[in-house]
Image (cartoon, rainbow, N blue to C red; front, side):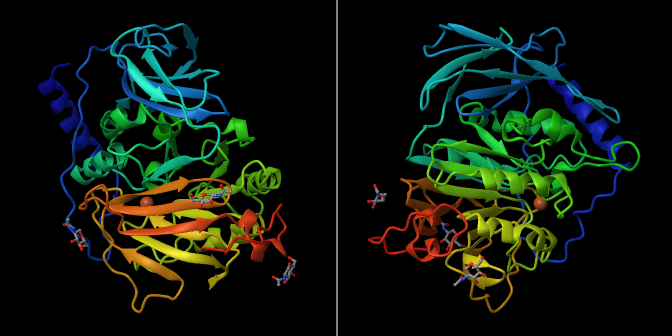
Length: 445
Ligand SMILES: *[C@@H]1O[C@H](CO)[C@@H](O)[C@H](O)[C@H]1NC(C)=O
Ligand SMILES: *[C@@H]1O[C@H](CO)[C@@H](O)[C@H](O)[C@H]1NC(C)=O
Ligand SMILES: *[C@@H]1O[C@H](CO)[C@@H](O)[C@H](O)[C@H]1NC(C)=O
Ligand SMILES: [Fe+2]
């Protein structure tokens, strides 16, 4: 299809689908800074060429390559190697596609490659045609650096966030939900895939779902997550999870748990049972850092989405506390906020630090209204677009920083050193997880 034909197609699709759906996000009762315009990203190759390429970690030394082609006949096959143009290995995988009302997706390929060496650059080609891509595997030991951004969308602010992320090296991107903001308009999932490809094809993007991924519809799509589960397949089987909506993985010395805020989490749910078993398996001597991602924050002093994470907090907070979770990242609220270590609404030096990082740049704009006065457990809060960086130096020390999009790359608006709970002299006295008190260490946050 040529460009004008695609535009017409997209326009017709919007027109037709708009009448089917009620948009729940238009009537928010708080002020927002004006959002910037949507960016639509097109495919410039042939119908057999790969588009929307993104990668995700599978187990300790494999990588899943995911991409879309318009043509059905393209094989789900990836050739790869350590030198450009010299592919000494190849792997075949699976493909899927889905139908959503009038929309039919392209062929969505998922191919797992490996075993791969740690912290090594590999060159790869998808489906035997089109351009060569390049990825770098994460390190197997500390140090490791994560880039973290939530509620991305696909606006000019998103492009600004991505440019900031891409201009400084990192190993893995973590996304606490709300990816494309397609909101049932399926071609926007494709456009989002193309916008993030330059970043997501180079470093693993490990994501969990937000409310904008649900896209359920009574009777026809009662369970939702049609596009999300087809396009963004995460390695849930490897952690014993039965659902793409929650999973965990280890990287370097960190155990990362991706929870689902929009699937059941009460004590009788599969997610709860899985989380309990997953936390019991954590070996702090191997992975001293435990990090959790959710979408709706459990701690939030913004008037936007106030209380939406409360039932999940009541269900799961004690489990995380007893397991010595170091940090909980959330999205959903379009602003940045960092809390001190907390448990059960009180400052607690053995609880996790909670951070809301829902300021990736989507079309809904910023959540401007914070409660006054600021609660004492809230350390820093600001409605500006940006992203975060977690650099874990070793088993005891990590550095967290938040970077605004309107500032230069050398500047962090908020930053703090964190000490892992598994070496905290104060928390080890009474911990239910494996703990090695360091008598010489002054406990930082
Ligand atoms: C861990 O890293 C921090 C920050 O670089 C450093 O001060 C500390 O000495 C390191 N600890 C060990 C055990 O290497
Ligand atoms: C970015 O925004 C912050 C907060 O509004 C402001 O203090 C700062 O001066 C801005 N920086 C630039 C470079 O515009
Ligand atoms: C130590 O842990 C036990 C069991 O979890 C708890 O009942 C007790 O209150 C804790 N003590 C302190 C000082 O935190
Ligand atoms: Fe959200």
